[in-house]
Image (tube, rainbow, N blue to C red; front, side):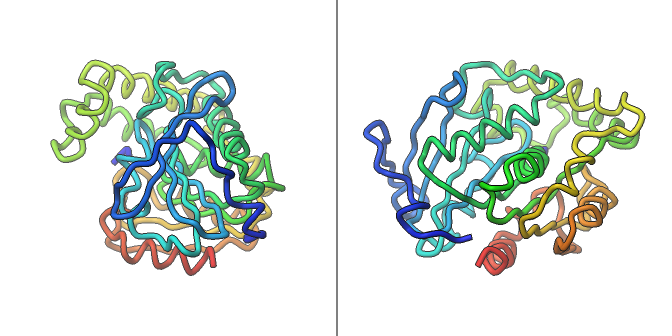
Length: 281
C-alpha cells in the first residue's frame, strides 16, 4: 500500500563507531541512527559496491517495512544500499510525524543530508510513493549529488480524484489486515491511525492550489538519468501521474508493469530488482 558511479573511496561510507551490525536479510546489515538536521534518523545499510543507492519509503513506511526484498536481494557487490526511515516514521521517532506545507522538501533535505553524513559523495535514489515525490524533489534541488533516479507510485500534483482516493484510506480500520498489521505492530494503533489521518489532511492541501501542484515545476530541472515505473493496477496513483512525470523529465525512461499494483516492488520483486539493477548499471 500506502504505501553513477564514482571511485570506491568516494562512495563507500567510512566506518562509524556508533553503528550496530545486525545479521539480517541473509547478509550483514548495519542498523543505526545518526543525527541529521536536529533529529536522529534511523537507517539500514548493506552491500559493499561502488554505487551507493538510497531507498525512500512511502507514507508511514520504513526501510524495514517497505524494502525487504531490495535489502535482501539487490546485488551487494555492485551496490551499497541504504534504506532510511524519514523523521516521524519507523525508528526515526522522536519527533512525531507532522505534515507542514513543505514536508516533502524537508524529507528531501533530510535524505540528502543523511547520505552526506554517511560520507557518500554521490548516490542514486529509489523512491516509492511519497518517497518517489521526495526523490523527485531531491534530484531537482541537489543535481550535483544524484547519479540516477528511479520512482514508482509517485505523483507531482494532487487532483480531486486523488483526494477521493486518499479519503478512502483515511480510516485504517478499513485497510486489509495484511497491510495494516505490520504498521500497527510498529507504531501501535493510536499513532498509526492518527498519523494516517494527518497525512491525508496534509497531502489533500495540495489540491487546494489551482493546479494541485506538489513539484511540477521542478521536473524539468531533473537532469540525471531517470526511470519511471508504474503498476497498471495501482489503485492509489492513476497512470496519468506517472505519464506526466515521464513527459516532463527530459530523456526519462518509462516502464508499465501491467499486473503491478502500488507495491509492485514487493509483489514482483525479482522483476523489479532486475529492471532497476540494469538501469543503475
